[in-house]
Length: 612
Image (cartoon, rainbow, N blue to C red; front, side):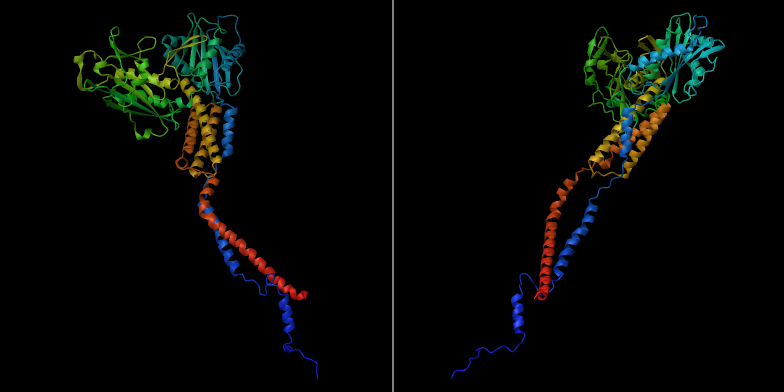
């Protein structure tokens, strides 16, 4: 009845069905994939990311700052040299004794030299002027006695003395003709030793024994003489003081003039503006022949100061220029008086339009010299000094500004003398006025205009030069300005160096690099000339070094742009690029991670059949 039952479902005919089911049951989509992952999304993402990477050099180039290389090491070397080793200006001092034949016992030249050196060393230790001869000097002593002479041993670098070069009788004759004649005689007789063989300036003092009172005179060249009843040893303090205080320090006692009071501009130029002011042209009108004054009186001064500064001169005549101060009538003086307390208000900047040419702009120093002609309401106008005396020059100076002279027309008390037509100031009057101006100009340089020097060993007479400055004063000014200019150059270059190194994104043009290079070259040349004793060349080179250093520091390309650090630039540009760049970087990382995962699934799928 019953037969073996068969399965209700007939078996599948396809023989591979069991393997397919087995394979399907072994495949896990979460860990495997059958196809190899494509590169399309990865390549697209990497291409976008690469475009950003390729744009970074262009961005860096667009914000790149050009910086010319600066010699920072050379700048530091110059500053350290000037701080550690002051400038050495060599000077050669010679003392010549004449007319001591009859004096016994005789003192040898070597003994006199030793005593003079000791005295000079003691005086030099008390002096700290920058630009003095310091301890860099040599001393030689000559004793002239007729046809014979004795002198100290000198090295090859010193100027050789020729016996009989200075005759006592001839010098005595020149003294009889006056101090100027004696000075000219010594310049001819001793001019060959005005510069030693080593290059340093040579200064000489002649000591002459004569039956008269002792008198000391300083010439307008580089010579001085002591004449009178004096022994060789008694003259030593005077000789040492002449060498140190006058020839070495220019007669000055104070230290180096601060830069803000130096009457020379940073570019080495001085503009002298001469102004003739008519307070009230309704009373009188005065004019001047300034062209003659310039040609005759000022041109020699400009030529003499050429090593120290480049001097230019201008002039003008102004009208309606009252003062801001008040004066009062003095019956004793029969004049109107204004005292020194009124000087700050005398210069009326609102009414005195002392304009100069455009060329006087920049860093040039402008010095105004004013001739003020008062009105009839306060004429004559006199300046009263603090001691109650009336000023002989009737003028005053203002540091960094210039000087003023009050010139009262003759007969100005007579109210009927008013003349409305133009009058000329006579040339003799102009000579006196310019002489006062030269004295004021010397004071602005820190030099005295007193014809006498009161020193430790007595009173010395000082001859004045018609050029305004004597030779030994020009030497001192050259040394002093060389010292000041080199220190100012080193200070400016050092400040520029520190500024450039502190701001990495500061623009440094090639022009600035050249100016710094040439400034260092001029400074080194000035140091070399100073060590050789070529004072005028040292002053010119130092002036160029300072001017170039100032030009580099105040270059328009530096002053007109604000400079920021790299962090500041990153903070400025990051809002524009960082959001997009962040998304691109994250997308690239995410796509790379996805590709690695999918590739790992594919490798897992390939490895599964081998395991089974």
